[in-house]
Length: 186
Image (tube, rainbow, N blue to C red; front, side):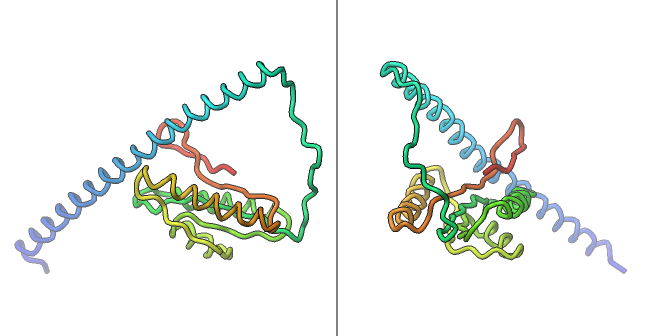
């Protein structure tokens, strides 16, 4: 039977753990806020670029663009799949729901597939579902690290396109929705 003193020590230990968890949640919320601000800025950037392209087409009287030499999908070529997960703690089912979406979607993609994971947690979940990942990229630790990550992925994919190894690249990620919700998209 526990003594009054040992119960008091356990209670104090539980209070300390509660304080640590509260601090971890605050740090996670701060980091997430940084990324949400970056996503919002990218939305504004995308809108500006889209409006610029539309204005250019109108000025030049371009009504449509047609691809003349449409290439047929070659089943011997690789399809690259890039999956953006999170290594951030306390994000709940963020990676789990994305992994399930990826698994369902990959069944509909014909031919050989090579998976690149952004984040160790998503890589482990994909491997638990039986998918091998050929490349692992670290999740950016700050907003400033996003651009070098994207540049690295673009360089690797362009090398494959230049060598004629691939026709397609699919990108999977969770897209923010209103509130604290998100939706897996491809």
